[in-house]
Image (tube, rainbow, N blue to C red; front, top):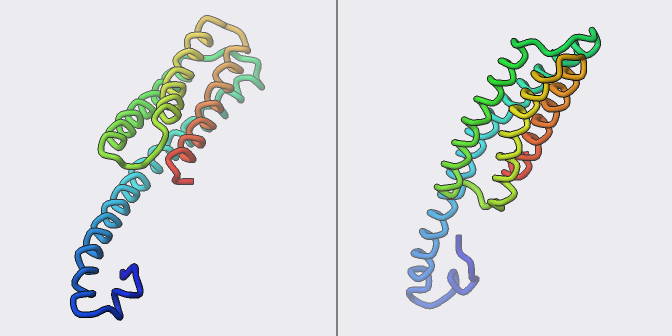
Amino acid sequence: MLDRPSDTHGGPGAGCRAAPRRVREDERRAGVSVAAGTVSTVVVPVALLVIVLCVLLAAWACWFVVRDRAVVLRQLWGAAVVEAVLVVQAVVAGILALIGGRDVDGLLLWGYVLTQALVLPLAAAWAFAERTRWSSVVLLVAALTVAFLEYRLLQIWGTV
């Protein structure tokens, strides 16, 4: 695009001066759209998977709360699956941060990623130690917390 009106009505060579600038702007725009597209196509599906898995885990834990039952080992394996997806997401976030996928506050981003990575293992250890109905409540709260943190992470990436 031509930025100055003088580029279209200037003397000889006015259009020639604008052409190199136009190429640089187009390249910059193409680079930004590729990085933004990468973030949207990689981060959003993984984030939605985390949210869905957390909601399913929370529903399962809620069912156990209603039935006055403690957490069972299968639920902890479910939390481990969510944790594995979170680790994959952390690796992807690290790669995208290295290549400059988005201009985000690194401390804020990694604070959320680290908090997400710690919530479920701590809740699983607590739920395993607490063999009452409250272990299911702990897992329920942890799963909903990770789902909310994931939604906030999407907002930080600027995809929501």
